[in-house]
Length: 210
Length: 114
Image 1: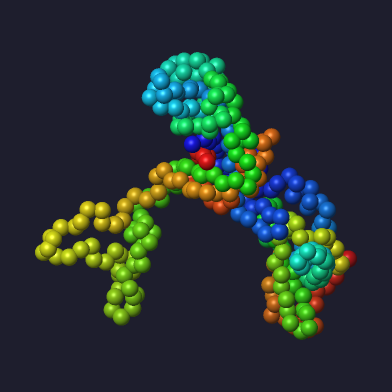
Image 2 (image 1 turned 90 degrees about the horizontal axis):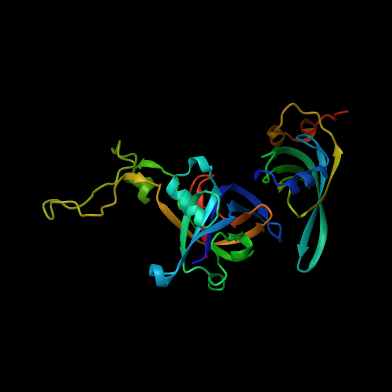
């Protein structure tokens, strides 16, 4: 899996060649810097560690500073490891190397986006599990429109089965959206336009991979 | 960077005449039929402009065609717009003149702004 770390900037719309308007997400992707290279000989597996987003040296711990110094990269906010990076890359990759969008992604190809979704708080079963709610709102039924209904039988088994879908905390979890089309790449501004929506709030980190 | 309005769209907007609700405009639209491309004209009164200042800005244009009212919503940055011509400035008090939909004949007239 090769990829980049980025930041979701927000949504907008652009026109395709046939003149249709397409909703898309703008992501600032990279430039990322290689901070560590793991080899199967020394670490048991192959991977590349990338860092993204400038950070004040004052706000970096000494331990992290030492880590960045070994690759001669200025301190960064987000560090993520990518296993089995692109084959043609693995030979060329050097510590401290800069990786841009066009090194990895091309227009009209597809990519996956991983991010933490927006937290929704404590939600009922209708929103959280797409339940239909309890039937009618007339004919004597008066206050159970969005309830789950029955959660199981009585004396047998006289308990609620594990994993029963109920209300609870929703959102704020790691979600991967697969096969989003790359509509446009602005390499001078490090921007990438991706068709459709992407999890998370604006200005939150996303991981782009293919 | 401001992603709400692309810089190329800012440039594109300068090529259009300034128009708003109440104005009569003529929109020249590129229509593709098979491999041929032709220009279709749509002339009418602007009812509203929506989402001004964003890439998704649209305007609604209304005309009476053979006693049947036709409204079209057109994205202003659409590549199928060839040209927009301002024909007549209208004097209206509202930015969205929905009341025009209920009016017929003489009542549906709009005074010209001079």
